[in-house]
Structure formats: structure tokens, C-alpha cells
Length: 275
Ligand code: DGL
Image (tube, rainbow, N blue to C red; front, side, top):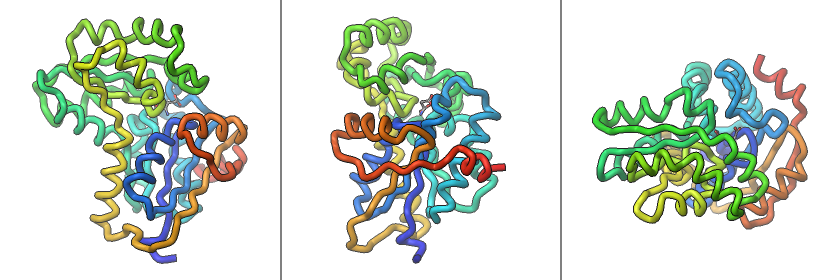
């Protein structure tokens, strides 16, 4: 297989990374995608850095067995703590979601006050804060973890009263701090975008890093001369480590489109890959 026609590998702890898949498919319709959602070990958000790094290595090894030309870490938690380790181990380009989200936040804030929301792992790593500060040291950053947002998004409770109450609880301190831009620093959060926007009101810009990440992927493919120009319709493949029917249901609800067969990769096979 030529380098150009090899697939793009994308992984996340579950369905969240599909926000990135949808954007890659929209911006790069000729590229084939192999997706892995680690549903057996979700959530990554509350787990330690060594554990998430080990999972990220195993997820990457699995994708490499499918001969992927780049790996997109479509999980904010894994991107926050494991991207450097992956880059030091592998020769192919590794694309995370922090850099594109941080860049978009810096270019969108008009008053220099940015909010970042994410899982506990992402927030305690301060990965966004550090990257934003490197880009512009004057920017004030307010961070908040919102652990209940992931199960709410997975449950499809996007516009329930309870979701709005919880969103108010988490987000009021950021709103009171007067931020004008908020980074949705978790791949699940775009699913709750409308509720989050309701709390902040229309004057606050929400950054969805999926769009920015897909742009990064396009740039990397062009830079390395490995973009696919063939006229064939790509056949994407979706793998999970457990309960494929639940993933399929959630994914179809969330993408609003039918998904091809979801295949299962056994946890033993996965663990053997990254030792
Ligand atoms: N995909 C994770 C992230 O973007 C959220 C879900 C989880 O905690 O595993 O941080």
C-alpha cells in the first residue's frame, strides 16, 4: 500500500473522539480512518498519568497494526499527559488536541481572559494553561474540571433540566470571572455545547478543538506529502474494546448517521501490544 493511501488512525477512550472523526471526514473526505474507542477502560479522565500513558501506548500500537500513516490522539486527557511519550516512541506524526485548541483560544479572546474546562486529568495537568501561556503570557486563564459532563453526554442527556443545573454549578465561577472564550477541553463536551452556551450566553465563544485538530491533520498530511488523492470512497473502520452495540447506538445518536459494523478488539490483545 502506498504511503498516501494508508489510513489515518484516531483513538479516544470512547465515543468522544468521534467529534474529531466527523471533522476529519468533512475536511478530508478522501482519507480512510481507523478509529479505536477504548470503551472497556473508559473513563481516562480520573486516572493517573502513568495509567493513561500506558493505555495511550497500547491504543497507538493497535492502530499501528492497521498500518496508519498518522495517529490522532482524539482524547484531551491522553493528549494532556501522553503525547510527548508517544512522539518519543514513534516515527510517524502524532497529533494531539491541546495545541490546536490552545491556538484557537489565543486567537479568539478579545480581552485576554480564557476559561478551560475538561476532565480532572486534563485540568490537573494544566496542559492547556501551559500551552496558552507559551503563546501569550499575558492571558488570564481560569480552569475547571467538570467530571459529570462525560456521563451526561454518554447518556444523551444533552438538553435536560438536570444537565443545565449541573452546568450552572460548574460554570458559574468562570462566567463570574468574565472570560470571553471557553475551551471545551474534552472530546465529549461539544455534545453539550448548547447547554454550556446557555450558561455563558451568546457573548462567550466556545472553542471546539475537533475542527482545529482536523485542520492540523490536513496540514501535517500536506507537509509530509502523504495526503490521499485517490478518487475511491474511503471505507472507515471502527474498533472498541468492549460493548460494541452500545458504542454503535451512542455514536449514531451523536453523529446523526449510521455507522458501519463496530469490531471488538480483546483487552488481552490490546495489553499485549504495548508492553
Ligand atoms: N475522551 C476524554 C477526554 O477528552 C473524556 C472521557 C474520559 O474521561 O475518558 O478527556
